[in-house]
Length: 193
Image (tube, rainbow, N blue to C red; front, side, top):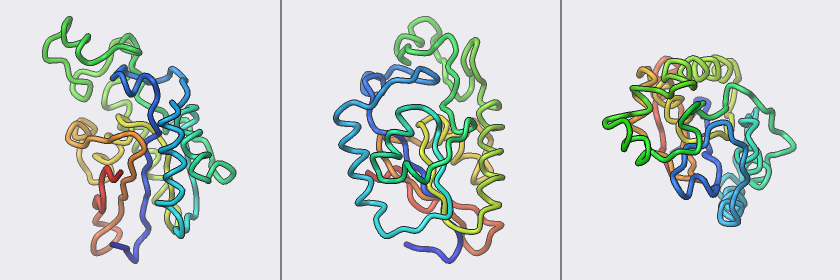
């Protein structure tokens, strides 16, 4: 399903030890696992033949290594606004562990003590969206799950909390674009593996 309008290709980084175990990985800079590296290399085939006016990556090692292994490292520009959610006191902690102490907690609604709230992540997503809409052509973006979920929500006009309705697997590919014209942003494909 191609479009006459620009498309934004989103890639969640490959697997890390913490993503495999469900630990919140915001600003801790950990490497990809061997499985994550293999999946990142596999993205090259999935993106083959596509043309991008720009390639942007989170500065995290896991996102940039995914970008590099997919064959786009030399073209990529690192952007701090693409960093994952700052989990603050919940960095390295699983959702199950958080819920044991704070029943009903939801990162999209409650945010993280000493970290970011959904509105903070949404503001960064809005800045990225403004930059992307100024580019005439397709753009490839490498980042992390919770940021990309908020980004997708903001792309289609939902509040940042709307990101809770989108799930992303590691090394997944999603495509944002437009329907009838540039005033109608849509999700064209989501969480493809």
